[in-house]
Image (cartoon, rainbow, N blue to C red; front, side):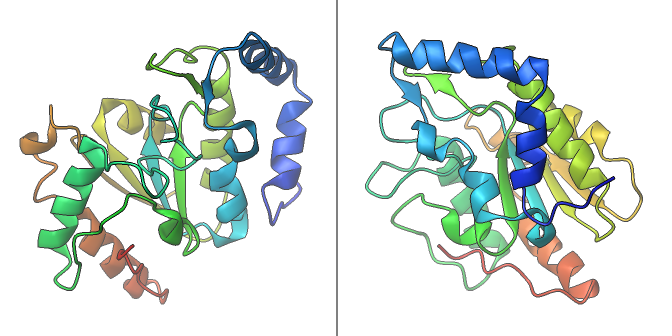
Length: 222
């Protein structure tokens, strides 16, 4: 199989498949109908643009983009600067404060600095209609992100997968090669964070694994 250093070749190959053409047609029609679709078209593949395939060291999996105005910008759990920090991300920050001694509570929710260090911030569905969570589920994005996971599984370099909640854990079943590492637990949502997300120490565990592999730890401060 051809090795793609960046994601461009992979994404291009997916866009040639019939399922993706149907997906693309659906999303285009939704935008042209006048509905507000997030993130903006130019930011749908932001996670892949910021974290090239050969730079992926860690993968965090979310579900679908935030559906509020100006929130989503193509990275799971992340919001653009100037937007209120959503509850799940606030809980992620709370865990970081207790898990990483030098971590200071951020004033914004933009996680681009993680992506630039090799953390692929992957939602399993990449678009959503304003005010309608999961509105683009089952349109075809799940197949695309399944193929992303399979591509990551093929990487010879070890990758750490951080899976929060049943949805992400299910996606993690596509990771079968033994060189990879999986950290899983409850979702950081206020509905489930107290069931074991708080205290999971996934951020320090990730850095310990990276260090043991001879790789630099992630600077989680944003």
